[in-house]
Image (spheres, rainbow, N blue to C red):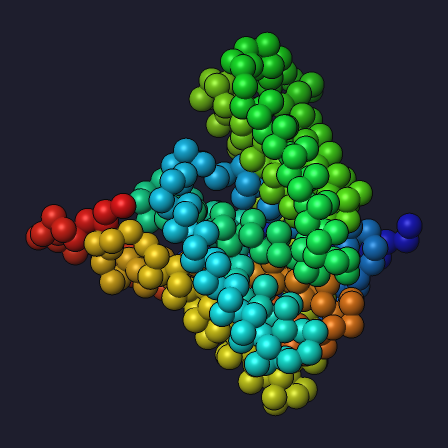
Length: 401
């Protein structure tokens, strides 16, 4: 396999430079690090300077980075915190979103591209939102838990829709395959959640600070095994990655908190320190800027799709938050829900490769996802902080389930 040396050096250079730019920009405005990763990928990629070239090796690493992003999202979800009404509300909100998305997709593109557009508009970039919420100290707050529930629905359910409708096989056949995958995964989740795991946790602790690193090796095994199972069953690999994150979290339940934190730090280091940046940088490198800016009609789709993310995904989520939630919190929650990018990239890639979506429309959708990631969380957190500082004079202002 031949690898371009300049590409091999420039990609980690971008990965190291992006946090520094984020820190520098933080004096004026909080910009997520992924924005700089994508923008630098566009500038150094074929669309502008052409210093970074695409090849199979970098694409493979990028695919693993995307899988790692969904794995970390699945691992972060605390189903005990979001089960019940929060998850039901999030699921209902997504059901409304998919109906709106497909209807709008058909209006924008009455041909085969309607399904791709519809599914893309229903996604929530939970994997990208998690570090933003964590860095802002919002991950375990009621606001963060609401976003977590919405994000879980907005990442998992679009993956189901991708597998059902974008696989190239009949939905009935795909549904049977999905049931098989669900049974296998369900058994794995059930086994992971049973027992006290003392022997497993003992092995983890004894190798946690040695070259053995059993916990990390076990987690990577679970990730690759379920990704491999998804590929064998011709499902979207991200479905397996997401499920692997859930199983890994259950495997580590009951371990001493200090050990779990250490494992989380190490996985964050592997994911957000290496593979996840590769995905976002490669997204910028492969972004078709020429197709986007060369046609005024296609360029006009960029702000339109950005607005439609709010209409399709944000508004239904905002209306389905608990009763008594303030209008500001509803707005902040809706903006977080409307933040999408990874699934948009996955859906548009499938559409372009299948010949059902032109490159310009795909670039406009990805560009809208990029804008949503740049603007929506920033505005949402500003609204949430402003709402948190407002005095509560009446008890009925507190959300009620």
